[in-house]
Length: 339
Ligand code: DAH
Image (cartoon, rainbow, N blue to C red; front, side, top):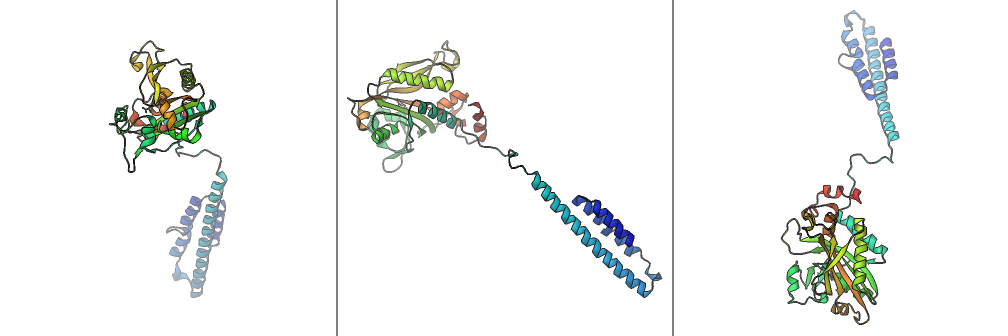
Protein backbone atom coordinates (compact mmCIF):
# COMPACT_ATOMS: atom_id res chain seq x y z
CA UNK A 1 0.00 0.00 0.00
CA UNK A 2 2.82 2.37 0.82
CA UNK A 3 4.32 1.61 -2.59
CA UNK A 4 1.08 2.28 -4.39
CA UNK A 5 0.65 5.52 -2.49
CA UNK A 6 4.12 6.67 -3.53
CA UNK A 7 3.51 5.66 -7.14
CA UNK A 8 0.27 7.61 -7.12
CA UNK A 9 1.92 10.72 -5.70
CA UNK A 10 4.69 10.47 -8.26
CA UNK A 11 2.24 10.07 -11.13
CA UNK A 12 0.10 13.03 -10.02
CA UNK A 13 3.14 15.25 -9.73
CA UNK A 14 4.04 14.81 -13.36
CA UNK A 15 0.47 15.03 -14.71
CA UNK A 16 -0.31 18.37 -16.40
CA UNK A 17 -3.53 17.78 -18.28
CA UNK A 18 -7.02 16.64 -17.34
CA UNK A 19 -6.59 13.65 -19.66
CA UNK A 20 -3.46 12.52 -17.85
CA UNK A 21 -5.18 12.82 -14.47
CA UNK A 22 -8.10 10.79 -15.75
CA UNK A 23 -5.69 8.08 -16.90
CA UNK A 24 -4.20 8.00 -13.40
CA UNK A 25 -7.67 7.57 -11.92
CA UNK A 26 -8.24 4.59 -14.20
CA UNK A 27 -4.80 3.13 -13.41
CA UNK A 28 -5.37 3.28 -9.64
CA UNK A 29 -9.11 3.30 -8.98
CA UNK A 30 -10.55 1.83 -12.19
CA UNK A 31 -11.96 -1.69 -12.38
CA UNK A 32 -8.48 -3.05 -12.99
CA UNK A 33 -6.67 -0.28 -11.13
CA UNK A 34 -3.93 -1.19 -8.68
CA UNK A 35 -5.91 -0.17 -5.57
CA UNK A 36 -9.00 -2.06 -6.73
CA UNK A 37 -6.93 -5.15 -7.44
CA UNK A 38 -5.28 -4.93 -4.02
CA UNK A 39 -8.64 -5.58 -2.41
CA UNK A 40 -9.67 -8.18 -4.93
CA UNK A 41 -6.47 -10.19 -4.67
CA UNK A 42 -6.06 -10.11 -0.90
CA UNK A 43 -6.13 -13.56 0.68
CA UNK A 44 -8.23 -12.96 3.77
CA UNK A 45 -8.14 -16.63 4.77
CA UNK A 46 -4.55 -16.20 5.85
CA UNK A 47 -5.19 -13.12 7.96
CA UNK A 48 -6.08 -12.87 11.60
CA UNK A 49 -9.08 -10.83 12.62
CA UNK A 50 -6.82 -7.90 13.57
CA UNK A 51 -4.91 -8.14 10.33
CA UNK A 52 -8.17 -8.07 8.38
CA UNK A 53 -9.29 -5.00 10.33
CA UNK A 54 -5.98 -3.26 9.71
CA UNK A 55 -5.99 -4.16 6.05
CA UNK A 56 -9.51 -2.91 5.62
CA UNK A 57 -8.85 0.36 7.37
CA UNK A 58 -5.59 1.02 5.51
CA UNK A 59 -7.20 0.17 2.19
CA UNK A 60 -10.08 2.55 2.85
CA UNK A 61 -7.67 5.29 3.83
CA UNK A 62 -5.67 4.71 0.66
CA UNK A 63 -8.82 4.82 -1.47
CA UNK A 64 -9.95 8.05 0.19
CA UNK A 65 -6.51 9.55 -0.18
CA UNK A 66 -6.35 8.56 -3.87
CA UNK A 67 -9.83 9.88 -4.64
CA UNK A 68 -9.09 13.14 -2.89
CA UNK A 69 -5.71 13.70 -4.51
CA UNK A 70 -6.94 12.80 -7.97
CA UNK A 71 -9.94 15.16 -7.66
CA UNK A 72 -7.64 17.94 -6.48
CA UNK A 73 -5.29 17.36 -9.41
CA UNK A 74 -8.18 17.32 -11.91
CA UNK A 75 -9.47 20.64 -10.59
CA UNK A 76 -6.04 22.18 -10.72
CA UNK A 77 -5.71 21.13 -14.35
CA UNK A 78 -9.10 22.65 -15.22
CA UNK A 79 -8.21 25.93 -13.57
CA UNK A 80 -4.88 25.99 -15.38
CA UNK A 81 -6.57 25.49 -18.73
CA UNK A 82 -9.03 28.32 -18.13
CA UNK A 83 -6.19 30.53 -16.99
CA UNK A 84 -4.14 29.62 -20.05
CA UNK A 85 -7.09 30.30 -22.33
CA UNK A 86 -7.84 33.66 -20.80
CA UNK A 87 -4.20 34.63 -21.09
CA UNK A 88 -4.33 33.66 -24.75
CA UNK A 89 -7.36 35.89 -25.36
CA UNK A 90 -6.34 38.76 -27.62
CA UNK A 91 -9.10 41.35 -27.51
CA UNK A 92 -7.58 43.23 -30.43
CA UNK A 93 -7.61 40.23 -32.79
CA UNK A 94 -10.08 40.43 -35.69
CA UNK A 95 -13.29 38.38 -35.30
CA UNK A 96 -13.12 34.82 -36.50
CA UNK A 97 -15.69 33.54 -38.99
CA UNK A 98 -18.14 36.33 -38.32
CA UNK A 99 -19.41 38.22 -41.33
CA UNK A 100 -18.92 41.94 -41.10
CA UNK A 101 -21.63 44.12 -42.58
CA UNK A 102 -21.24 45.85 -45.93
CA UNK A 103 -22.99 48.84 -47.40
CA UNK A 104 -25.53 48.35 -50.16
CA UNK A 105 -24.41 49.51 -53.63
CA UNK A 106 -27.15 52.15 -53.65
CA UNK A 107 -26.03 53.43 -50.24
CA UNK A 108 -22.46 53.63 -51.53
CA UNK A 109 -23.48 55.71 -54.54
CA UNK A 110 -25.79 57.87 -52.42
CA UNK A 111 -22.98 58.61 -49.97
CA UNK A 112 -20.67 59.42 -52.85
CA UNK A 113 -23.18 61.84 -54.39
CA UNK A 114 -23.81 63.49 -51.02
CA UNK A 115 -20.07 64.04 -50.68
CA UNK A 116 -19.70 65.48 -54.17
CA UNK A 117 -22.64 67.84 -53.81
CA UNK A 118 -21.72 68.93 -50.31
CA UNK A 119 -18.32 69.79 -51.76
CA UNK A 120 -20.13 72.22 -54.09
CA UNK A 121 -22.05 73.85 -51.26
CA UNK A 122 -25.27 71.84 -51.51
CA UNK A 123 -27.30 70.86 -48.44
CA UNK A 124 -28.64 67.32 -48.13
CA UNK A 125 -32.35 67.24 -47.25
CA UNK A 126 -34.44 64.12 -46.65
CA UNK A 127 -38.17 64.22 -47.29
CA UNK A 128 -40.95 61.84 -46.27
CA UNK A 129 -41.61 58.64 -48.21
CA UNK A 130 -45.30 58.97 -47.38
CA UNK A 131 -46.17 62.16 -49.19
CA UNK A 132 -49.21 64.29 -49.89
CA UNK A 133 -50.69 64.34 -53.35
CA UNK A 134 -50.08 68.07 -53.29
CA UNK A 135 -46.28 67.95 -53.01
CA UNK A 136 -45.95 64.91 -55.25
CA UNK A 137 -48.11 66.25 -58.07
CA UNK A 138 -50.10 69.48 -57.70
CA UNK A 139 -47.22 71.67 -56.54
CA UNK A 140 -45.17 70.32 -59.43
CA UNK A 141 -47.66 71.56 -61.97
CA UNK A 142 -49.27 68.14 -62.42
CA UNK A 143 -52.98 68.72 -61.70
CA UNK A 144 -55.53 65.98 -61.11
CA UNK A 145 -56.44 65.27 -64.70
CA UNK A 146 -52.94 65.70 -66.13
CA UNK A 147 -51.79 62.79 -68.33
CA UNK A 148 -48.33 62.91 -66.71
CA UNK A 149 -49.95 61.25 -63.69
CA UNK A 150 -50.48 58.11 -65.72
CA UNK A 151 -46.72 57.53 -65.92
CA UNK A 152 -46.45 57.58 -62.16
CA UNK A 153 -49.20 55.42 -60.73
CA UNK A 154 -48.49 54.57 -57.13
CA UNK A 155 -49.80 53.19 -53.87
CA UNK A 156 -52.63 55.23 -52.43
CA UNK A 157 -53.14 55.53 -48.71
CA UNK A 158 -55.90 57.32 -46.82
CA UNK A 159 -56.33 61.11 -46.54
CA UNK A 160 -54.84 61.96 -49.93
CA UNK A 161 -51.54 60.44 -48.89
CA UNK A 162 -49.45 58.35 -51.25
CA UNK A 163 -46.06 56.70 -51.41
CA UNK A 164 -44.00 59.29 -53.26
CA UNK A 165 -43.33 58.45 -56.88
CA UNK A 166 -40.28 60.69 -57.18
CA UNK A 167 -37.96 62.73 -55.02
CA UNK A 168 -39.20 65.81 -56.92
CA UNK A 169 -41.91 65.79 -54.24
CA UNK A 170 -39.32 67.39 -51.99
CA UNK A 171 -38.76 70.41 -54.24
CA UNK A 172 -41.62 72.61 -53.07
CA UNK A 173 -41.37 71.36 -49.48
CA UNK A 174 -37.76 72.48 -49.38
CA UNK A 175 -38.31 75.79 -51.21
CA UNK A 176 -41.10 76.61 -48.75
CA UNK A 177 -38.97 75.72 -45.79
CA UNK A 178 -35.68 77.38 -46.70
CA UNK A 179 -36.56 79.96 -49.38
CA UNK A 180 -34.09 81.30 -51.95
CA UNK A 181 -31.21 81.27 -52.65
CA UNK A 182 -30.75 77.55 -52.13
CA UNK A 183 -28.66 74.62 -53.31
CA UNK A 184 -29.87 71.23 -52.09
CA UNK A 185 -30.14 67.57 -53.00
CA UNK A 186 -32.79 65.11 -51.80
CA UNK A 187 -31.78 61.49 -52.07
CA UNK A 188 -34.33 58.85 -51.17
CA UNK A 189 -36.60 55.94 -51.83
CA UNK A 190 -39.51 56.18 -54.25
CA UNK A 191 -42.36 53.87 -55.18
CA UNK A 192 -44.43 53.16 -58.25
CA UNK A 193 -47.04 50.68 -59.21
CA UNK A 194 -44.81 48.83 -61.70
CA UNK A 195 -44.71 45.35 -63.13
CA UNK A 196 -41.29 44.09 -62.04
CA UNK A 197 -38.76 43.09 -64.69
CA UNK A 198 -34.95 43.38 -65.05
CA UNK A 199 -35.15 47.16 -65.32
CA UNK A 200 -38.34 48.04 -63.38
CA UNK A 201 -39.00 47.86 -59.67
CA UNK A 202 -41.85 49.09 -57.49
CA UNK A 203 -39.25 50.43 -55.03
CA UNK A 204 -36.20 52.38 -56.19
CA UNK A 205 -34.00 55.31 -55.29
CA UNK A 206 -33.53 58.75 -56.80
CA UNK A 207 -31.47 61.79 -55.97
CA UNK A 208 -33.15 65.06 -56.76
CA UNK A 209 -31.37 68.39 -56.80
CA UNK A 210 -32.35 72.04 -57.00
CA UNK A 211 -30.47 75.28 -57.30
CA UNK A 212 -32.40 78.54 -56.99
CA UNK A 213 -30.62 81.86 -57.14
CA UNK A 214 -30.44 85.04 -59.20
CA UNK A 215 -29.59 84.57 -62.90
CA UNK A 216 -29.40 80.79 -62.89
CA UNK A 217 -29.21 79.46 -66.44
CA UNK A 218 -28.92 76.22 -68.40
CA UNK A 219 -25.15 76.78 -68.49
CA UNK A 220 -25.01 76.38 -64.68
CA UNK A 221 -27.07 73.21 -64.93
CA UNK A 222 -24.76 71.64 -67.52
CA UNK A 223 -21.64 72.61 -65.60
CA UNK A 224 -22.85 71.13 -62.32
CA UNK A 225 -23.96 67.91 -64.05
CA UNK A 226 -20.68 67.50 -65.89
CA UNK A 227 -18.55 68.06 -62.78
CA UNK A 228 -20.71 65.66 -60.78
CA UNK A 229 -20.62 62.87 -63.35
CA UNK A 230 -16.87 63.27 -63.87
CA UNK A 231 -16.39 62.69 -60.17
CA UNK A 232 -18.78 59.73 -60.04
CA UNK A 233 -17.10 58.00 -62.98
CA UNK A 234 -13.63 59.26 -62.03
CA UNK A 235 -12.78 60.67 -65.48
CA UNK A 236 -13.74 63.62 -67.66
CA UNK A 237 -17.13 62.99 -69.19
CA UNK A 238 -19.01 64.65 -72.04
CA UNK A 239 -22.71 65.40 -71.71
CA UNK A 240 -25.37 66.74 -74.05
CA UNK A 241 -28.91 68.03 -73.65
CA UNK A 242 -31.95 66.97 -75.61
CA UNK A 243 -35.41 68.45 -75.17
CA UNK A 244 -37.55 66.50 -72.70
CA UNK A 245 -40.97 67.15 -71.24
CA UNK A 246 -41.71 67.32 -67.54
CA UNK A 247 -44.52 69.58 -66.30
CA UNK A 248 -42.38 71.09 -63.51
CA UNK A 249 -39.52 72.37 -65.67
CA UNK A 250 -39.48 74.75 -68.63
CA UNK A 251 -37.45 74.18 -70.72
CA UNK A 252 -37.06 70.51 -69.82
CA UNK A 253 -34.20 68.28 -70.92
CA UNK A 254 -32.84 64.81 -71.01
CA UNK A 255 -29.16 64.99 -70.17
CA UNK A 256 -27.19 62.27 -71.94
CA UNK A 257 -23.79 60.96 -71.00
CA UNK A 258 -21.26 60.21 -73.72
CA UNK A 259 -20.98 56.41 -73.60
CA UNK A 260 -18.08 55.48 -71.34
CA UNK A 261 -17.62 52.07 -72.91
CA UNK A 262 -17.21 53.06 -76.56
CA UNK A 263 -16.38 56.75 -76.15
CA UNK A 264 -19.28 57.69 -78.43
CA UNK A 265 -18.57 55.40 -81.38
CA UNK A 266 -21.59 53.22 -80.67
CA UNK A 267 -21.84 49.87 -78.86
CA UNK A 268 -24.53 47.55 -77.44
CA UNK A 269 -24.56 49.41 -74.10
CA UNK A 270 -25.52 52.72 -75.71
CA UNK A 271 -27.66 50.97 -78.32
CA UNK A 272 -25.22 52.22 -80.99
CA UNK A 273 -26.12 55.85 -80.35
CA UNK A 274 -22.92 56.80 -78.53
CA UNK A 275 -25.00 58.37 -75.72
CA UNK A 276 -26.71 57.12 -72.59
CA UNK A 277 -29.85 58.86 -71.34
CA UNK A 278 -29.07 59.62 -67.73
CA UNK A 279 -30.51 62.66 -65.98
CA UNK A 280 -33.83 64.38 -66.66
CA UNK A 281 -33.58 68.04 -65.74
CA UNK A 282 -34.58 71.58 -66.62
CA UNK A 283 -35.17 75.10 -65.43
CA UNK A 284 -37.72 75.15 -62.64
CA UNK A 285 -41.17 76.15 -63.88
CA UNK A 286 -42.31 79.57 -62.57
CA UNK A 287 -45.47 77.92 -61.23
CA UNK A 288 -43.36 75.59 -59.06
CA UNK A 289 -41.31 78.49 -57.71
CA UNK A 290 -44.57 80.24 -56.85
CA UNK A 291 -45.83 77.17 -54.96
CA UNK A 292 -42.54 77.34 -53.04
CA UNK A 293 -43.18 80.96 -52.13
CA UNK A 294 -40.47 82.29 -54.43
CA UNK A 295 -40.95 85.14 -56.89
CA UNK A 296 -40.03 83.88 -60.38
CA UNK A 297 -39.33 87.44 -61.48
CA UNK A 298 -36.56 87.70 -58.93
CA UNK A 299 -35.19 84.15 -58.91
CA UNK A 300 -34.66 81.33 -61.35
CA UNK A 301 -33.34 77.85 -60.85
CA UNK A 302 -32.72 74.40 -62.20
CA UNK A 303 -33.73 70.94 -61.02
CA UNK A 304 -32.56 67.46 -61.89
CA UNK A 305 -33.50 63.91 -60.94
CA UNK A 306 -30.75 61.30 -60.88
CA UNK A 307 -31.92 57.69 -60.88
CA UNK A 308 -29.77 56.48 -57.97
CA UNK A 309 -30.65 52.84 -58.48
CA UNK A 310 -29.87 53.10 -62.15
CA UNK A 311 -26.60 54.93 -61.47
CA UNK A 312 -25.51 52.23 -59.01
CA UNK A 313 -26.32 49.58 -61.59
CA UNK A 314 -24.25 51.39 -64.21
CA UNK A 315 -21.36 52.05 -61.91
CA UNK A 316 -21.09 48.48 -60.65
CA UNK A 317 -22.22 46.70 -63.82
CA UNK A 318 -25.33 45.21 -62.17
CA UNK A 319 -27.58 43.95 -64.96
CA UNK A 320 -30.83 43.15 -63.14
CA UNK A 321 -32.60 45.65 -60.87
CA UNK A 322 -34.13 42.78 -58.89
CA UNK A 323 -30.80 42.12 -57.18
CA UNK A 324 -31.11 45.51 -55.49
CA UNK A 325 -34.04 44.65 -53.22
CA UNK A 326 -33.56 40.89 -52.95
CA UNK A 327 -32.05 41.04 -49.46
CA UNK A 328 -29.22 38.66 -50.33
CA UNK A 329 -26.14 39.82 -48.42
CA UNK A 330 -23.87 38.65 -51.22
CA UNK A 331 -25.10 41.66 -53.22
CA UNK A 332 -23.69 44.00 -50.59
CA UNK A 333 -20.50 42.16 -49.86
CA UNK A 334 -18.95 42.44 -53.27
CA UNK A 335 -19.04 46.19 -53.84
CA UNK A 336 -17.91 48.03 -50.72
CA UNK A 337 -14.26 47.43 -51.51
CA UNK A 338 -14.62 48.92 -54.99
CA UNK A 339 -15.25 52.47 -53.86
N1 DAH B 1 -39.20 63.33 -61.21
C1 DAH B 1 -38.96 62.87 -62.57
C2 DAH B 1 -39.25 61.36 -62.62
O1 DAH B 1 -39.12 60.70 -61.65
C3 DAH B 1 -37.55 63.11 -62.99
C4 DAH B 1 -37.20 64.54 -63.13
C5 DAH B 1 -37.36 65.19 -64.36
C6 DAH B 1 -36.70 65.28 -62.09
C7 DAH B 1 -37.01 66.50 -64.55
C8 DAH B 1 -36.39 66.63 -62.26
C9 DAH B 1 -36.53 67.21 -63.50
O2 DAH B 1 -35.91 67.39 -61.27
O3 DAH B 1 -36.18 68.52 -63.67
O4 DAH B 1 -39.57 60.88 -63.66
